[in-house]
Length: 490
Image (cartoon, rainbow, N blue to C red; front, side, top):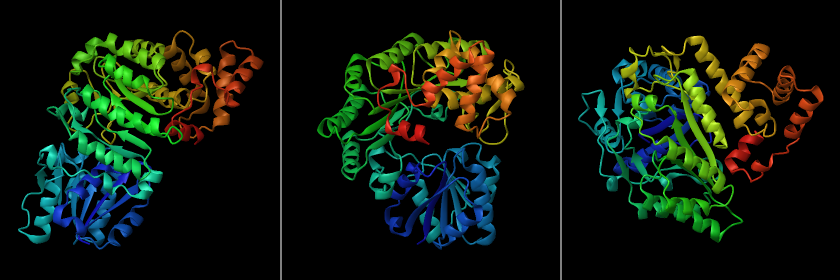
């Protein structure tokens, strides 16, 4: 074997779509190429040992914001114990501000951007000559029809135990400055018939969980309807063996034809991830985000009341121009729309994103280490930002976990953000912890807090008992998608 493709995934259940694209497009070098994935947190020595067990001449690493620091240690050790091995880096983290990075200094070559064509070409030159003179190679974007789809490279073990990432298109036409997709000129679709044939093959092999990574699934409604119909046909033919699909949805683009398709899905078969990010029009304009807030709100309300789709909606704290007060207003507005989950994110300065243009004017201060989280800006000081970070963590534990369905509305009352922030401050003051809080302890702390707010001890404990015993309010009685069920059982 000559070439090893590898990366450190965030979890074992995450299967790298990018590496499989590279393997599928290696051409005549494919027979000399192998793929091996690791998980962050593994010992560096063990990773290097397992890499060298393949005796590769070239090792290609996929570099992302979540694995760059650990991968840098792997590359440093690999080059010390096996300097003859050529190391090639690729992925979004090393595709921008490339020469500033320590991991790039350790490596032999870097491919920035699309690697489908450029990585195999580079490997051929390394193996057969002439040896490339340049260290950094800008990825060539081929016509979509020339990219070989990678789905046959998901193994039976992947299909049985891991999330299968798929994409019907690449790119995004929107220019939101906090997102790397802002650098794309448009969205490029794959040939739909070929893509659906690959999905059919995965389904026939036993795949039942499909996570679409398209940034704009509902950009082309005709395509969206055909993809949804593929899954509806499977559900109709085999209702006892359901399939589950996850899509990212543009919130203000939900025409009647798409609503009709969505309404046909039964409970537990469909999940939408929707990025609201901010309801503040001034902030949206500042970061080049085009969004009709009223349409977006109306569509989320329709989805929560007229469909069985599981709704996961994102907000970002720390955007330039967003105060705590305006964020709170947006949070409360979103809570009133009753999505199943509100993902409270903290702004990160991804390498290459245009958000950097606001650094000076808005006093944006970021952590210099991955994931480059915002630490403060001119409207939110450091200590307040840390309160928001803790809010986000506790929100996941209490609200998004689904374990406090009866208690949460009582805890939040008519001012969700303000009430949960007060609870978050109290919980941190009384536990000094944001992680590793056992469920039993968390339940007891919530009960204690309700008592500090005037609730009778027996009433508070009875309320928590109704949740802790597994009972759910009527609004949550639909079966949870398998992804949710697994997470709630964890």
